[in-house]
Amino acid sequence: MPRVFSGIQPTGNPHIGNYFGAMKNYVRLGDTYGKNSIYCVVDLHAITNPAAYDPAALAERTLEMAVANFAAGLDPERVIFFVQSQVPEHQELSWVFTALTPVGELERMTQYKDKAAHLESVPAGLLMYPVLMAADILLYKADTVPVGEDQTQHIELTREIARKFNHTYGETFPEPQAVYAKDALRIPGVDGQGKMSKSKGEGSTIGILEPLDSIWQKLRVAPTDPARVRRSDPGDPEKCLIGDYHKLFSDLPTIEVAFTGCRTAGIGCVDCKKMLMEGIRRELTPLQERAAELRADPDWVRDALAQGAQEAREIARPVMEEVREKVGFLRL
Ligand code: AQP
Image (tube, helix red, strand yellow):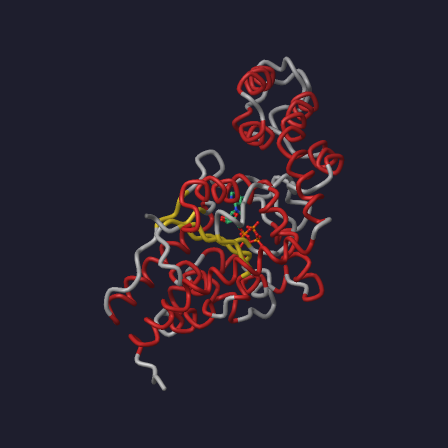
């Protein structure tokens, strides 16, 4: 049976990019593969980017990210869901992989280059991020990784690391494959500045747990097709992020009305945004209600995460034993 692994950073409020690009796939694959689906809140990754890390907020953000995933439908009785720093084997395997990975490969990673470009002093952890990610996945010998398209290069590096380890020490790890959500490969930020991303701040994101009136305030001023200067100008919904969002939230008849209305200038952008808001309300209201219930029961959330960490360690320990032996560390 395939083994699924994926992680999500507690670097801010989970947004619709995380939700449609990754979290919904976690739930879908979890329904099929049960305890062979392993997910975690990757707090060790979150501390590698000083622009998005606040020690005073990390624990709270970690719990909020867990609440969001439970609210989105992850069931800790069916899948394994935990917090990365609770399973120290991730760091141990990461170090072994660090010793195998050429620095040049890491310096070529576009996500590293993008993030490092904004920093005066670049922490080595930011460079090592993809090595830790390879350890996250391979520690469970996972072969299936649900992620957004932004992670493609990191998954390819994970495959290379697996190949190199197997070549050096003998067949040990599978070469994992990314699994993408078809219509949510790379959801654009609501500010129109490229990919929606937590680390770019609230101006980029539509949070899945964000109050609906706050979402509306962002949508109201969100850029649309620049061809629509006046209401009477026709537009192209395929060139508009509101059009992209409709494909995620609206039913087919609504999309038809909105897209035809845009192309014929039959409706204005505000009308189109109001139609979108209906879909957002329909999708996010039940999720936000479940999140409120979970926040009222923090012990349940903590217990579920503790149980998940225990289950994860049961898989991770023997794999690490196998790695230690193959690498040649002394056994006492
Ligand atoms: N905009 C997006 N569209 C589709 N999928 C996305 N993902 C993230 N953004 C989009 C996918 O969500 C999962 C978790 O990613 P993350 O925790 O790394 O989230 P982030 O929002 O991208 O946060 P950061 O802090 O800004 O990290 P960077 O800048 O490194 O991406 C992943 O599967 C991701 O692909």
